Every structure is written in C-alpha cells, then in structure tokens.
Length: 459
Image (cartoon, rainbow, N blue to C red):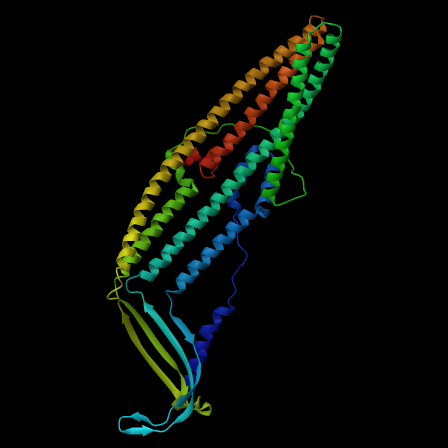
C-alpha cells in the first residue's frame, strides 16, 4: 500500500511541476539588430537615428510581428509536446440502477442500485517508429523561421519607408522655403510690371502673364503645404504619436553617402528575407510530404493505467481497490476512402508549386536588385547634372548682378535671374533627395545589409 501512495505522489509531481516553471521572459523580444543602426548612422543625421530608435520602441507593426513570432514559438512547443508521453487523471462517480429480474444464463439477479468510484491515472505514448512526429516538429520549426524572416522583412520595410518619408519631409520643408521666396520675388515683379503698365511701358498681356505666374506659384505653395502635412502625419503614425512634432534636420546639413559600390554578385539576394522565406517553405513542405507518406504506416501506442476502483467510498483507498493494466495498441487504417493518397498527392503538388515560387522569387529578387542599382546610378548622374546646371545658373545670376551694379540691367532683370536660379535650385534639391532615397531603395533591395559590406562578403 505504501508503494502505491509513493507512485501516486510521483505522478502528481510530474503533472504539476511544469505549471510552476516560469519562462525567463514572457515579454515578446524585438530585435534591435534588425534596425541596422550602424548603417543609418552613415547618413550623419542624428535626428534620423533618434527617430528610428523611437520607431523601434513604439511602432505597432513591429510589436505585432514580435507577438507573431512568440505565437509560432508556442506552436512549436505544442507540436513538440506530441512527441512526449501523455499523463491524465480522470475521476468518475456513478450510480448503477439495475432493473428487476436481470438474467445472466441460469442466474437471475433482482433489482439493485450501487455507487461506483473510479479514480484512474492513464499514461499513453505513441512510439514514433517512423519519425512522423519528429517530422511534424521540424515542419513547424520551418514555419517559425518563415515568420522570423517576415519579422525581419517588416523591420527593413518600415525603417526604409520611414527614412524615405523623413527625407521627403526635409525636401518639402526646403521647397516651401524656396516657394515663399519665389512668391516674394514674383510679387515684386508684378508690382513693377503694374508700374510699367500704368506709364505705358508694357502691355496688358505682359501684366496678366506675371499675375498668372504669381497665382501658379501660390498654388504650388499650397501643394507644398499639403505634402508637408501629409508626410508629418505619416511619420507620426510610424512613431505612434499624435501631438509631438517630428524632429528633423535642415536640408543644408544633409550629405550624400559616397563610395557605395555599384557592382555586386547576384548571390547577395540570399540576404533578402523573401529569399530565405522561400527556402524555409520548401523545407517545410518537404517535411509535410514525408509525413504524408508515413500516414500509410501503422501506429503503435503504449498505454498504461493505474488507479482505484471501489463500490463504497470507505473502501476506495484499500489495497483491494487498486488496479493496474498496460498494453500496446497497434492501429492501421485499412480503408480511408482515398484520403491519405489524396493528401500525399496534394503535398507533392504543393512542393512543386513551392519550387516554382522559389525560382520566381530568385528572378524577382535579381530584377529588383538590378532595378534599384540602375535607379541609384541614374539618380547620382542626375544630381551631378543638376549641380552643373545650378553652377551655370549661379554664374548667370552673378553676371546680371554685375551688370545691375553698373546700370546695364534693370531691377526686373535681377528678379528674373534670381527667380530662374531658385527654380534650378529646386531641381537640384529634388535630385539630391532622390539620390538619398535611391540609396535607401538599394539598401532595401539587398535585404537590409550595409551596402559597404556587400562587396567584401559577396564578390
């Protein structure tokens, strides 16, 4: 009897001890390394870096992806639990009410009623002879890897999109500043044209043309204000704030990153999350195909039961009430209506589809990488041309000022020259920001890897 109670105590310890085990950290872990702050610091913009740190702390999409990873980690644990034995305790209290004159052969039993107390502990274990349960665990682990790569892709996409909007906001600020200056210049031009019209030195068509130009500049300023407000609101959503302002740098302090290699090996696409996701997906479906094959094989379950069974409560813990049984249960489906064969074929088709998708992903990755590289080179070339054009326009403006100082040109000539210079300046600003954004696009296309390190690692 003593051994029986010791056995019951050990089983209870096995059952309840995992409930008291606490995880080291129940809070979803985010990955600061996915932010790649070392790369973003190369832009030399402290406000950008600080905003990215706020993004890391507050962005809801990043929080949800961290939760998604934790969810799939629990799925892996649940599947791994299927590889382990199960232990259950199920009590039963019943009362039998028998009718009169029950016949058992030649023996007749009159009506009676009695209680039945049953307290069994049942253990069962499916012997994984064919490794099906292990394969299922490997399959869900690959699914977990897919989710982890999806989390990394979210980090790359959100940080890149945030940085692009950030620099576009700086461009909008500078555009608005120049636009106000252009409106002031055009207002002076209109006033001087009005004076000339009143004394008969210009026609009404010339005056209307200048006034029309002024309204167009004001309309463009309204668009600049709209763009600025839209970008500010977008960045606030990224940072999960509503009232705070967006700290940003001044355009004049923005510099281009120089020395980025413009030729890479095509294997750099292996850094991309979508490429890694497709690799893991092929492995996952490969495991599923092997699992489907093993469904045709028999299963073997080892089971055992120990407990107490009595008809009177006061006899429940007596030695006579103890019982124990054990055995092995083989099982095999002889006919399932073709379900298992259909499942196997389904998994095979799914595997072929995954292979095709993998090949397509490779082509799309290379295409996106090449397109980003072309866009980056084009943006740099356009910026160089814009700088040359701005220098020439600056010389023209200086010549007009020199002529004006000696009385060889009018005030209107100076205003027109300055206006033309500011127009070209806007083009230079746009090309410079486009160069920065194309750099960000190239970073995104390579899978969020420092562009200076890719040449060392892949060529």
